[in-house]
Amino acid sequence: MGFRNTMIGAAVCIFIFYFGLLASLFFSTNLKGFWESLVHPSTLFSIRLSLIAATIATLLAVAIGLPSAYALSRYEFRGKRVIDTFLEIPIIMSPIALGASFLVFFHTPLGEVIQQRGIFFVFEFPGIILAQFATTAGLATRLMKASLDEISPRYEAVARSLGSSPWQAFFRITLPLSFRGLLASVILSWAKAAGEFGATVTLAGAMPGKTETLPIAIFTALASAKIEKTIVLILILVILGLVALYAVRFTGRIFRYD
Amino acid sequence: MIRIEGLTIFLKTFRLMDLHIQIEEGEFHFLLGPTGSGKTLILESVIGLVRPKTGRIRVGEREVQNMPPEQREISYVPQDLALFPHLTVRENILYGIKAKNQSLTTGAEYVGSLIQVMKVGHLLERYPAHLSGGEKKRVALLRGLAPKPKLLLLDEPLSGLDPSIKFEIQQLLKTLHVSFRPTVLCVSHDFEEAFLLGDKMTVFMDGAVEQVGKREDVFLRPRTKKVAQFLGLRNLYAGKILTKDDRFERTLLGINNLHLSIPNRAGHSDLEMGRKVDLYIRPEEVMILREGKPVKESLKWNILKGKILDIADRGRHHLVIFQEKTERVLFEISIPNYAYRNLDLSAGKHVNVALRDESFWVME
Image (cartoon, rainbow over the protein chains, first blue to last red):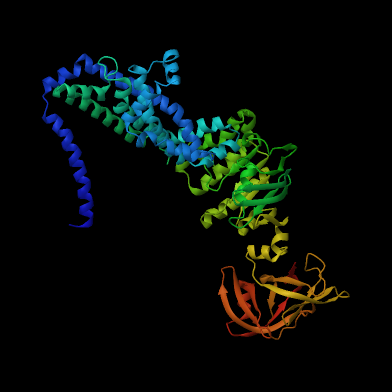
């Protein structure tokens, strides 16, 4: 077998592997049961909860991640390397470890004050957002930094020389130019948040009608041997993910200036 | 007037000490230095992207070294132009006027005439991606000039262009300068660029200014051998001052045992006896004498015998490599084509050469 065929063959194998996995879902379900599980109130609740939580968590991750990404992309400052390394903490740390760490934190004096005087996180809706934020903020920052790195700082230098303040130069030049990459970063971060399981279940629990996001619903459905529902939930999650991926491709086609 | 006074920059391993540049209003000034000499850092500190350790930058009456770039009124046109790709040509051009909250109506006439001179009127609704290289250059210059900056900073405006576009942009920059008299500081490593465009130039090497002067001053009378070499000048020789004759205002200079009589005015400073100097002989001022023809009195000071080693056709002129007989010193001689045709030269031919007084330049 030739070199080229070997390489392409490997790529095709990966495709068959994942496609087969998805196809088996359809093989094990029927339309009637599918529909019943889909419109079941608990399923609809999980969908809504996941969409809302992932969106809020992503917005928060962008709010802190975008300025951080800009700083890491454009400036040299003390501690930059350390910050850059810490962005990978949620990637190297198992999500369940992350969730457990939060539980530990909320039992420290500071954590207790926050819970009593401020927001209650443990086994509550804010806990979902916190868990999803924790797992995605680092990734979002990394991805957005990569998008900003692609835009030459010279555009801003010229804009500044023409009379723009740093804020104006950012909003009129750098932001629109990197918008495509930033939007793709946001969508990927959102998909990652929507699929988050380990940290969420540890911090917010798996309470039906309260903290049961889609991935958690899959876990509980499977645990109680509701195969039909499990498959429906998996498919919804897969479709959400595919829509997100397609959206990334789509943003690649618009907002192009070259 | 723009004055850079005592600019000193320390950045990582780079050191720039005590730079002074003065640019008159309406002057096209070149900062010329080899690649890696720190030109970009100077440029960035003038724009305000790099904070110098000490030194002052004056724009007119204002000291701007502590101001952010947007308050300095210095427009920057980088080498890659950095046209804003998401804005049309019109939006690019008007960017500075809008950013500075200048009135669009009062600036309209000026911008209109700029657009006319730059011939970009038909491009206003296009995006930069749909412009040719020359058109992009024009738009970038226009964008820089539109807000009427006190100084226009250009970074290597002619480098990386095709010869045809290069000529077009060169002409355009000249027209632009004649029509609007902007004060320009242009940074470059290309002496040809500087020669084509500049009024005055500052030659900058190894973190220090080597020479400041009008363009002819620098090219015809480089102050040091270092400058001459950087400018790509040939026919540089190490020599020694032998005797001086004050009656005829001439000096005898030796390249080893080859003695040349040069006029005293062919040097920046007084040439003392015994001093080691560098001599530059301008290739276009050397004359190959035609056999049998009488030699003018003014050419008789320095006539050398020798032979032609090689001839190269350089397009508009021929370059003749001449070897002098006694010391075997090589000279490059540049002859315009029309003169070359009358001379009947070939490699190996023995000829006499006159070094005209105008061909000499003595450097410290």
